[in-house]
Image (cartoon, rainbow, N blue to C red):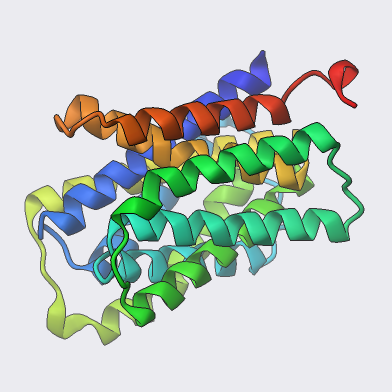
Length: 278
């Protein structure tokens, strides 16, 4: 039950992050470079405050790898978001995540059961149903950036399976990721666009939807096989679409309902109790 609660909170955070990013960039309130840097910096500040408040020394063994993966995800994801649509972006991002995490899990010796592969197929089919009918010919640079973001997010998630001090490791990853993202902002100074609304949206994305949610994700990952962690994340685009329907009055279409059913069924099969597997 504890793992279920943590994963549920993570998925809500990830979906909120998508909505906040859409609001800031899609609404023209902030440029991509500023959004990425503010997101990382506010995430770092929030998590460092939480580390200080908990009154327990932070584990100091974190390498720069997680920070590289995090920055490698945040920067291309943000830039790609303004070059390609949300539908094709979700398909590319989560497709790359699946290939990275499931492939790595297989190389590590993970062997999903037949019912798990059925779950994978259903969940991926749900993502395709959600996104494919609305796709146009995407911008090739945006495609490459989103695939790179997906690979990096898969790498960041896999790094979290080590299970040592999730809060401290995530705080350091965000702090170091901010340093790595700074040159990106400096190179984009000519196109900086700041509004109060955009800054608040980016801060909410970094502090809560990213910083806190990523810490919870690192807390959950040691209990999840790589392939299972990959499939669970396919709930995010569906949950985001449902949230947009409720909060932004976007249409609830038969395609969205069909995708929700497929993804939910697929994820359920992957978390089915082991005693029922064949």
